Amino acid sequence: MATFTVTLAKSGARFTVEQDETILEAAERTGVLMAYSCRSGTCRSCLTRVLSGSAEHDPEYADELNIDAGEQSDNYRLLCSAFAYSDLELEK
Amino acid sequence: MVKVLPASRAAHAHARVENASHYLNRCYAVERHLMRTLAARFVDTSQWDYKRQLAQDMWEASRHADALRTRILELRYPRRDVDKKHHPDMLALVAECAKGANAEEFIAGVYGALLPELLRAYRGYIELTDALDDAPTVAILQHIIADIEAQIARMRALASQVSPGLFDASAEWQDYLRQVCASFGGISGLEPPTPKPAEHLLAARPAYTIGRSVERDRRWRPALFHLPHENKYDVEGRTAWQRIESLDKRVAMQVWSAISHFNEIWAAEVVAASMWDFDNQPWDFYLDLARWAWDEARHSTMGFRALEGWGWDVPDLIPWGNALYNAMGPMPPIQRLALLHFYEEGLLRAGTKQVELRILESALDDGSAQDMDFDWADEAIHVSYGYTWLRHLLGDSNAGKEEMTRLTDEARETVARFVVEHKDLQEAKLAPYFDRLYDVIAAMLLEIADDHLDIQWAPVVADEEVLKAL
Image (cartoon, rainbow over all chains, first blue to last red; front, side, top):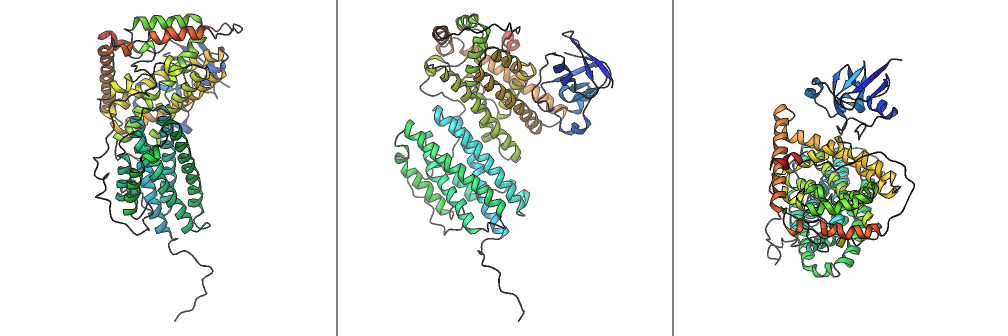
């Protein structure tokens, strides 16, 4: 199973994310504190810009997320509902 | 001649789908507009016990209306008619109830006349319908009847404590409303209509309008703000608060969170006022805002419960501000909603609630931690409501986003100016509260094992930038 590294640009924190866990779940598992609330992609607490790498929302729930097309094309993702597909650097 | 079997059983002539949907649609109109009226009168009511009861009953009315609407649509009633053509007689009936001259008269009219009439209509429906064929409706109405019976009992018990004799003193008003109801053939519409009470002394009052400023319960001294981050010019208030902070960050968080929750009533008021101000929105708009307003009123009650739980004289020790609602009063309704959403989204994105919860857990204060935990879950829902409905109101486009930013920026500046204009008033001073509170807190402190919690916390001061610019 692929494992990727997530780096937070502002805090410098790093953690690993497994292929089958959301980025928020990985942060929690490794003890990295991140703002979140609903865990369902509706409250936007975890909205974060991906500075490099590939992260995509869970396609099964893509229509239920509170994020618009413009934000997604600007590389914003809801970390509670997004999976990593490469190493990532996040604007956090 | 034709041949048939005899009827297998007798059935009530009225128990057919079309009759059922029309009957229920009259009840739906009453519940829907009662919900909006309760929301508005909740804003206008200052007496704390009445205020929170009105909020709960408003939310219950939204649940009743939602269940009825769903059932009416199942009964082949056109969606467009359910949502757009509310029965004019029922609108007129609720509009008369809204005209109660003050909170007490309004309460007497709703709980002494309108809700008993509604109960009579629901019971009458169950008598007319078939419990097998129409079982889904019967199940819904049995729940609604139980709710309304409880609402009336609660409010009567409350009134006997807060305003003894309230219902007797407003007997004429209740009688007038019953006459209005009878003139429409009752809520069922099946009774012979009586003449309209046009000559009644209480008829022809002007239509109700919602207030643009609020007052707090008279047991509290007038206060504009509740914690020092709201008014950075109150240096004495900030210094007095810092003495409390110096006791321990856990103590400060216990007190801060309770005072903050208690003062969330302004958010309930902003949302409830929006339910009144916005007309002709989709049903889910009102359903969501009813929940939002009720949640904020519950959060306020959580804070009050915690403060009372420490045995404190809450009206004497705790400021209960009205600046946030009143600063927004002159703004267009959409701007008030936009600003509330800006504040709530900002708090969650800053991770404030998570940090506050950790500190309360560190204090081993299970009650306060539990309150914060559920408050946090509610606020996440509210941000979703705000996001959804502001996009609906402003348009899901770049222009809509830009308008949202413009509205929010302008609103933040308006609130900041309000602070500047009121900062020197006696009601803006928090030191008298926190000086007394410090002594009370210091006398009841406990010592627990140090868990070495390494979290620094500071309140989100959303408008620090705007205040600097002024």
